[in-house]
Structure formats: C-alpha cells, structure tokens
Length: 449
Image 1 (cartoon, helix red, strand yellow):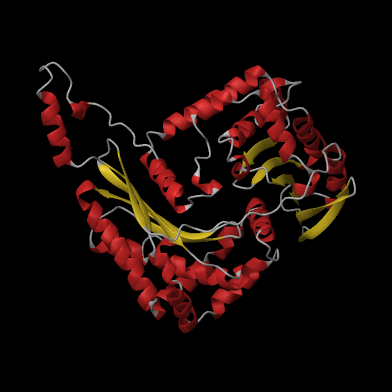
Image 2: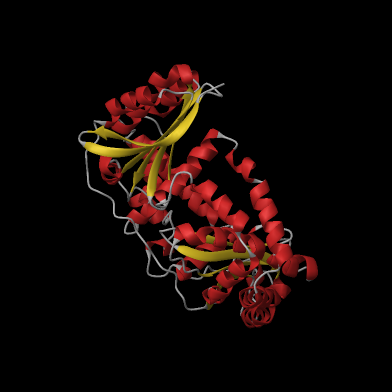
C-alpha cells in the first residue's frame, strides 16, 4: 500500500521559519509544489490598479535568458507545468511535474523567480493581453454588474476597485514598475509552501531551499480585514441588453469562524447556493418563472464576510424579481428553515464530501485555505461532524440572528426604459434628416461610477 501522510511543518531558510503544508501520497508518480506569497495580491496595488495583474501576466512569459517560447518548450519537453496566478492577498507559483523530473522542475521554478522575462517585448505582450481582457469585459454584462456591486458593497476599501484597472493605467506601467512589484512580493517572511505527491518531503524541501535562499527576508505581512457597507442601495446602469442582470449582496457578521462557518454553509445551501431545490431557485424560477437560475451564497473569511447572489431576468420582470429576492431573504431570516430542508442539506453536504477530496490538488487546496484562515489543517473533518450533529433549533437560532443580510445592495445592468428612450428619440429626430441614424441604433454611453 502506498504511503500516505500529511501535516504541517516548518523549514528554515536564511534564519526565517517558513510554514510547509504537505501531503505525501504514492498513488500517482507526480509532484506538486505551490509557493504562496502573502501580500502579493491585487489588494496591495489599489493605488496602482492592474499592476498586479500585469505583473502576473509577465511572470507567465518565461525567463529573460530563454524567452517566452524557449522556456515554454523546455517545460513541455519534460511535461512540467508552471503557472503564476494571484488572488486578493496572494501571489502564487504552481508547479506540477513527473516524479523523475523533480530536480529539473524545481530548477526551472528557481530560474523564473530570479530571472523573470523583464524585457520590452514581454511587457508589451502582457499589456496587450490584459487590455484585451479589459475591453472584452465591457461586453460581459455579468462582469459589469458584479463590478458595479463591488464598487458599492465594498465602498472605501481596496475591494471596491476593478482588479484589472483601465487600458490607460496598464499602458502607463514600465519595466521598473513590474520589477518593483515582483521584489515587493517575493519575500521569505511572507511565504507559505505547499508540497505533495509521490515525493520525499525532506529531499524536496532541500531542493527548494537552494532556490529560495536567493530571495530577501523582507517583512512580515499584516493580514487585512474589511467590513461591508451596511446601507441598502440600488444602482442601475443602462446597456444594450435584452435582459436584466441583477447582482446583490449584504453584510454577514462572523465573530468566530471555527464555530460559525458550518452554520453559514448549511444556511447558505438551503437559501440559494444549492441550485435546484433551494429557496431562492424555487421561488424565482419554479413558482414564478422569472429567471433560468437564481443564486445566493455566504462568504466567510477573515478578509471579509458577506452574502452575495445574482440572477438574470426579462426586462419587464426586473422589478418583480428584485421584490421576490427581498421577500425570500426576509422570510428566511424571520422563519428559518424546516426539518425537511435541513435533512436534505445534511444528506447532500455529507454524501458529496468524497467528491470534494478526490484529487491531490483538491486536498492540498483545502488544507491551505484552512491554514490561511487560521483553522487546523484537518478542520474539514471537524466541520463534517458539526454538520452531522446540527439540529433544527440551533440552525434557526443562527439564521434569525443575522438580520443584517436583509440590508441588500442591488447592482443592475439593464436596458434604458422604452418610454424615456422614445421621447429622446422623438426630440432628436426633429433635428435630423431621414438618412441620419436614430439614437436606438447607437450604443448607449456607459455611466461613470
């Protein structure tokens, strides 16, 4: 039988103790390494919007020595995958490889850390990719509604800003800006290491130490925490759309993640995160036919906790759909759930657990999230037991305490009202010839935030 162990240990590099989350599993001859640098995410460049995204894009362009194409070929020849990504607070290097290629894979990771492709060509290519993404997003009404919601729900925090910035901001960044961003992110005191697979943990960490000791010690990262705007509001932007895109959110107060996360998980499942069978889906789609789908979930993290959801509906059903969302959530908070709903939620959440832990990356990912949130690595087992033991009175008491989720903020992307639009068209048509295009044929001007 293949050896299978997991846990948390520390490795010392340049006198700095670095946490290591590991899982040793010999089922498949592969290795997985993730270097997570706290403070390297988008929130830490709120004064330079889009800089983190541009930096991450360039870090995926290989090394200066080999260039983008040759570096990619070298990875492909050895079946090595190396990818750089970022979250709100973190910059992550993910490395996957065959067991026999571990030394070569780690060497290439080290090359990328110390010799990123800081060239004009790579920077321009990265700028083009990010700007294209920004422009494409302007035709994605789901994206625009979500961005509009963030601007209000997370007002006065870095979470309110668009993570990609604007084309003008992206064009303004120089190689020095990228270099400084990389140097600020890659610090040993901010590093968390995740390793797993058919590896010898000690041997793998020794190889990693050799490439990581070239990084500066840096400074400790102070974790961030934000609260949600508690004032309900509704924001509307007009766009040439044939349906309304409705996004909404509200505060969710969490005082003790270890004691409350399982309650939030079950409550969220019943209210709207489970799809068909959830309260919101039943009321919005099944009973009233207002939308193809409707969703709401609870996010519980040290960074920020909140409720958020979305739906799409016909333009003429927009107001009714919003009214139903408010009514469903208000009734949920006031009256709680039924025993039947609780039993169904338990059955699914407990029964589907093996599917959420099938792969090495799933298990390591869950362990990292628990660790990052200040919870034990095996908190998943604790949470499952909490769900198993949950009774109706406890769940309903929790739900009824959280009246703050009634304080809903709505962000809506919808078409301009026909009555107002026709009046505008009529007045303009008096001053135009028959050959002049009408207002209805032109793209409406986007409102400014």
